[in-house]
Length: 128
Image (cartoon, rainbow, N blue to C red; front, side):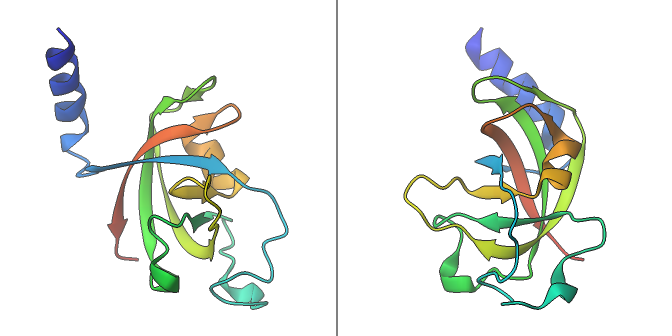
């Protein structure tokens, strides 16, 4: 039964092509200066859909400026996924031992997740 559930969930998301799994959370200001662009306010998108990468994906800043599409698949504790996707630009690195793969601006997180704490995501890098 468990295998069937996994198969159904995988096939449901297959059309999105989001095949990597990770954990995300939100993070609050200040966003400047940041590890990618210093104090350059022009890198903060007007829709405020941006985020930070954890040490698993940071690559010594090599992923700065890249765009990722994310979709919440489940809450870790409490909260609810919206079923939508969001595309963020990487402006920061959060490099602590407990940092998840993604830390999203509140505006970006609100598109895909309602609640507090961590949530599981599917993600892929996209061209922008």
